[in-house]
Amino acid sequence: MIPSYPDSKNSTIAGNLALMKEILTSGQHLEFSYTRLLQLLYSRDKVVRLLASATLATFAYNNISQQQLIASEGGVRFSRFVEFLQSDEEYIRCNAAFQVSVGCQSVSPSARALCMCDIVTASHDSWNE
Image 1 (cartoon, rainbow, N blue to C red):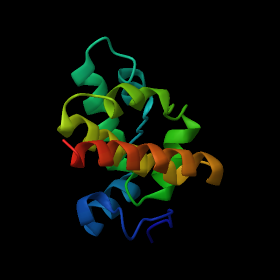
Image 2 (spheres, rainbow, N blue to C red):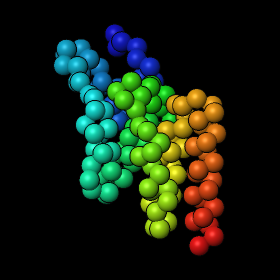
Image 3 (cartoon, rainbow, N blue to C red):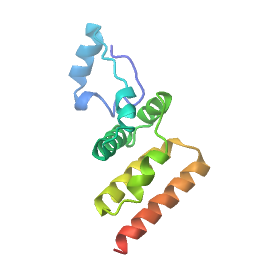
């Protein structure tokens, strides 16, 4: 019998229920931590910071349990996105807007409203170029 985990139907290892069952029954529980990705948000390299935040957004997209896990390991500060939202490059602004919109789902309603305002501003600026 496969233990029940939040979102296990939707996030089964690459959609492979047999693989998940094999891993769980073999006793080889894979330990995964977001700590390293969260540390990369503070890299000196702008591209590394952008890719780390994109990776976190990919894991968190439509997955509340992963959003909560990221938050429990330290979370992502909105300040990490400001430079990207204000970038001269449209691709970077849009990428950051997506990342913020994913991250906004796990914050308080008042903070979510501020996040969404920043997304709209970044999107508006891109459309007017």
